[in-house]
Image (cartoon, rainbow, N blue to C red; front, side):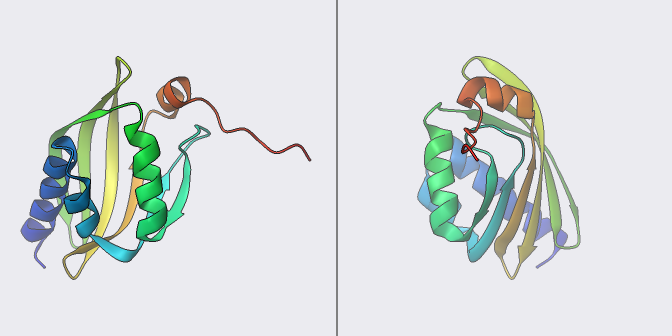
Length: 129
């Protein structure tokens, strides 16, 4: 796919997410997608495959975030989305890096305000060792 087609794929995904159409979002992911959500918030982690990513999306949706796509930048199979994310009355800017192959997103690495996510979703509870 061309850089423009990759950008359009990611743009459609954001539009579907904003509309609450999670099935369309999931349809754009490769079966073996890897999703990296940094930080120590309760929703942070690396998720493999559609089942784990769907579980992550369900936890994310509990606080009803809104995402405003500001800009898309593409180079080869990489698309960077600059977004404003508002959740629980707080807004931060994200840079989301997507890898697209054969019309599907195979990897997403989210560069978010991790402190904001920890405030909103809480911190991960570490197992006592």
